Length: 262
Ligand code: UDP
Ligand code: UDP
Image: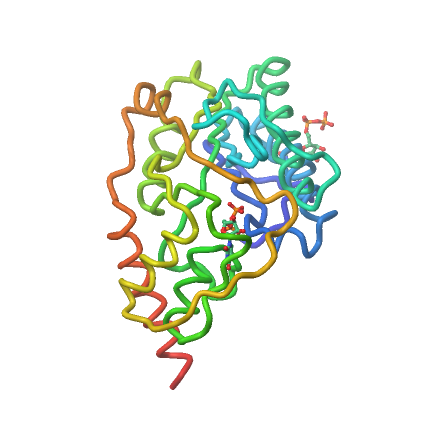
């Protein structure tokens, strides 16, 4: 079924995974009002649906709730540092308000909620024009285009392979109803964007050059999840190292770009 979560949805379900919302900065900033609506109106509708069906509901929250963090690595107890009026606010504040709604529906209506804070994730089946860093670098490397480093490339991110993340979602969904989160879900391996670019160049065998472009506003300087809670509560930790995940992702983009080229 194709449906816009900003409108009510009447279906009969046992479990809801609410992942609705673009997650790439270029895409969520292209229609920022709709981005906030998707997170806030969407959460209200999905929580209303969960309440009526007595369904357990998982919320795809985000490391963006920590903003540009002063606490490193980020633990769930850290409240974050978000600019409420910046270009990223439609996403960050929308997701923060969604967390508020989840916890209020839990306290007020006794809903079984599962709030996961997802850190940067990548893998096959991303869109070539997704705009996030892993797919950009791979597509640029495979096409022999310049690799676009924003800022000086010393900012860091931690990248989780998609299959590891999905495993965490399913484990979390099936925990005891007393377990609400929030729980950080991500891979604690931390890399600068320069390191990522060099790894992608090496694995693709590309001779693309690195070029430096302006750093987008409010771009977080550093990000790494503390996954102590996920390890103990979900008995989960990522299993796919960055290079292995990148190889799978590169193979995927090679096949997509080959088909396009034909
Ligand atoms: N809602 C929905 N599907 C349902 C039940 C509710 O989409 O099966 C929507 C409904 O449009 C409502 C929202 O969820 O606006 C919140 O529902 P809730 O029951 O919390 O609030 P109320 O209906 O009392 O305003
Ligand atoms: N970035 C980059 N080049 C790109 C795309 C992104 O250097 O072509 C940087 C971006 O400035 C940020 C990091 O890579 O510091 C991760 O960006 P992304 O959009 O993937 O996700 P974010 O974690 O910022 O939401």
